[in-house]
Image (cartoon, rainbow, N blue to C red; front, side, top):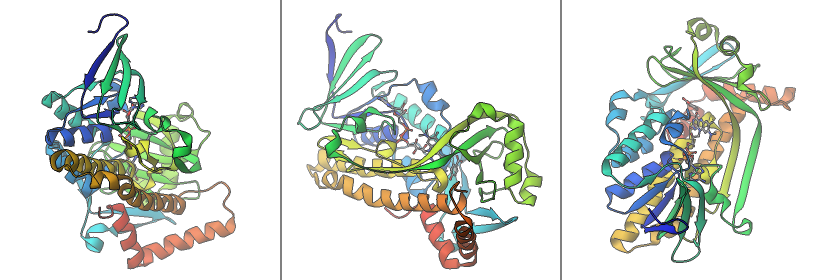
Length: 398
Ligand code: RFL
Ligand code: PHB
């Protein structure tokens, strides 16, 4: 430990800010390629694992986890889904990904992905700092960027070649970029998702996305015995005002009669409200700072794209850093922002479209309702429209 008042300094190649899925996956891909890195996270591992978030993995994400050597449990416990169901007007309509485009998605919670990545990182012995306070980024417009933080009252400095800002929407990385250098695109929706997790069997074998006059609802799952359900609520709602009984009643109202009848209820083991937002920060590179995942963009969860986009950014960044260090070729790093943003904007479009299609908007008039009904009706009656949804949902090619 450094003497009182001095700074404990170390150096590495890549300093990764944030131990969410983006930061941990990048760390693992770099470690596998023999590139020194450190992960600096402001929270404890237990806190990071306590956040219940995404549940659907695209094939690209599963492949990335395989490359990182952390797909063992995922292959055993992940549930492969060949389609989803849309529920409206009292009926359910299946969209069969397998028949339409020969592809599928895997149900495996973000918590489990994070747990697997944490275990692999710990096993490989690479440095990870949890509960780092006052993390700050410096000199990323020079050849010698630095990251500073305090841990247990001691000041630390990490000198590195590159900084990867994987610290989520509220992180310090994007905030460290001067305003005139970045351009923000944003849409905030006037509602959120109230979600609960329960030790109950899922209501159906596949996910049900329900559009109802009382609002959107989603029936998802984490396993054959654990369910994840959401209902759309106004942004002003608080989870404390929703007893389990009130939640189950509301969910039942929004489902088709067969699903409402089959729903098995039980005590919630987690209940929270997530606001819905579309957000992109351009570009995704500032000198030697690269933004990845939620630090650079947010999608409303309707298209199940947030975690998958984070994995896709990280693959581009890992490949760029590997080409740079192993072949002295910086072309991929130079293309990073452009390549990511092309994919990001398509996922933004799809997530915005799914959100517009399925939710009740408080300012929608009678005309807007009819258009929404017509779009749903067209969608389930058109193989071309179903194929377009399937193609986007399972993930566009990289
Ligand atoms: P994360 O997971 O937010 O991880 C960022 C990490 O950075 C840490 N951090 C800092 N570390 C050091 N210094 C600082 N100053 C720091 N500030 C923050 C944080 O503690 C955290 O550990 O971002 P990442 O890795 O980019 O991963 C992205 C995904 O987490 C995200 O896209 C999805 O979970 C989005 N999302 C959902 N996506 C879905 O596809 N389906 C969902 O159901 C779904 N539910 C959600 C969500 C996001 C939510 N947020 C962000 C509030 C529900 C919620 C509540
Ligand atoms: C989830 O299981 O949490 C989940 C699944 C699909 C979505 C959003 C969330 O579109």
